[in-house]
Image 1: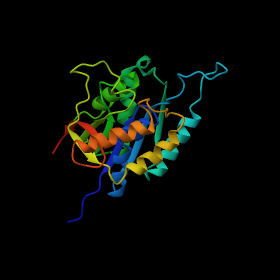
Image 2: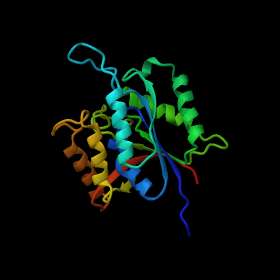
Image 3: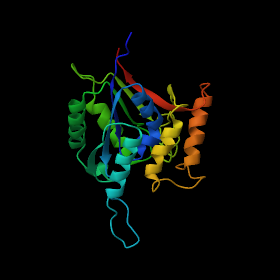
Image 4: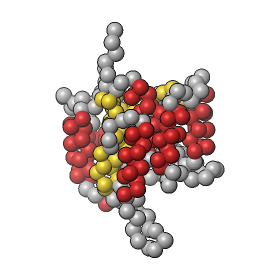
Length: 229
């Protein structure tokens, strides 16, 4: 029987979160023939100041996001360009409406997004906006929602049972880990030297650890937020 292909939407706060969180899984989906789309809510740059005390523009981050999408063979990403690390200054309803508009445009069956307990405020708001915009109303296309972990945010959150990332779904990325790492090269400006958790070495260690816990060579871990049969 021919497998039914799906539309996948990855909704991330910043360009690079999508690769850190589910780059290997995105590659698995494209290998399966699924259509993968990416939406970035925040520009990921304008909270920074350069050496001349000027606000950093987001052009390089946008270009990196486009390059990474090409490496994974997914559709060109969409950018909402909300203010970096200041999404909490925007009316939440406005954010939800923009996310809802993209969901209605693409009609995805599956969404991947941030874990609600992440330290980064933009990650938290992105999660809440996705869960609100994709609420299970009649005729909603979204059947599955998964949250991913992002090194240097998920594990840095305040330790507590309520905020901890406890994965219960794992995707084997043994055959796509190299592609994930290649896509990360597009974000070289965002990566740090080991032992920083947002380093290439840490990404590999996490993939190997998540894989080993499930008897795989490499895996990405997720928390199931919703599955509708």
